[in-house]
Amino acid sequence: MLAIKDASETLGGWRLTDCDLYVTMEPCIMCSGAIVNSRIKNIIIGTKHIKNANIEKQHTFKMEYFKDSRVNVEFGIMEDECSIILQRFFKDLRKK
Image (tube, rainbow, N blue to C red; front, top):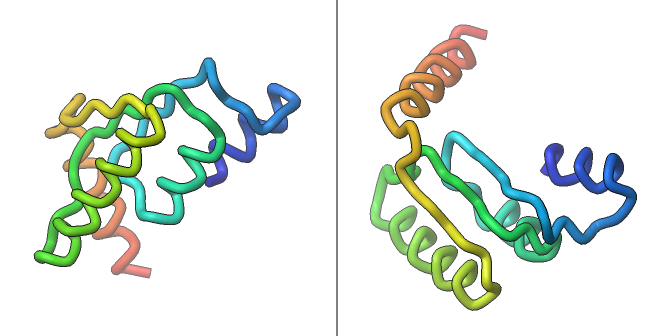
């Protein structure tokens, strides 16, 4: 959400049609809506977020939502590196 907000402010408008978004982990449903509404062309996702069956259902819903909205989605770019970053982030978060 912050990246979309910052990009909109920098570019002077909410339509980010010529922008790509790179993320370490699959976005939540709320962020997915913001991505679609901002008209980002491509989203490149490092790794899926799958912990239980409910998350898998959300994943399927979001992928259909992106497809219907003409957002190109690519998964698995630097997947191992993204997983390590996320593990470190959540480990540090639990320490606080």
